[in-house]
Image (cartoon, rainbow, N blue to C red; front, side, top):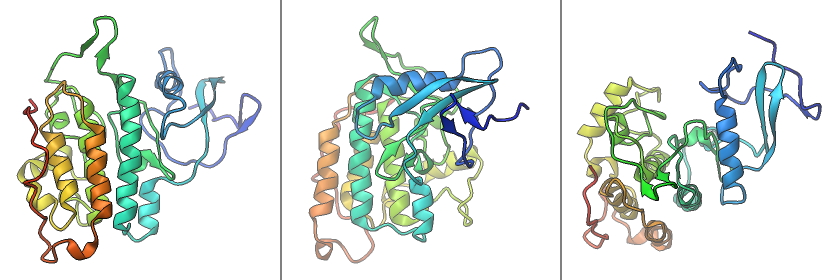
Length: 280
């Protein structure tokens, strides 16, 4: 493998390794996913939670994408806090990420890999390597429903439909976001091992299917339970109501802890907005 250059474009010094993934590899003779990510970031630039692109180009045998360095991921911050965020912090994260997802979705893209490691302090979404368009601008139509594909994204946080090979839509990004919020509040998820290691994707799917929403959301604000129910019941091509979801987070933030149940059970969700569609 060719040596990574010390500088990029003669201006940017390559520092320590911050992370790695399946897309950070040398270019051969095909289009780089970094170029795909660059094009998407330029379209999304200026939106809530979108990084500013400093430069993109070729350096030796590598494609290089230079972004603002904004600090640690929420995953690293969570570990540094002994897996404990306050309820206010979690709700604030959810509120900011909903705004980011609304902006991404409004440009006809599904991120496809919402997780702790892809969200940075303050709060920014990164890694658009597998982001796809869900809206055909030529035909002015939503992409058709398809199944039989492969899982994309990170198994611990993807939707059940994604596990089943259904092409992802906006609702899948939302389901991933809500899994993140539940993870922050519980410190883990039922489909993580006791060492917080990832299980095989087949085991994760089995656990997700077997875990009821009541059990998954035990002891957390009922508004987040309602968010999960709402998102899971969105139809494949239905536009999410982001303002409604944000209002639930604001409501949870405004409800004094003294009014929340003390028996560890979620409050009833009979007042929740009832979805009119069942997701395929």
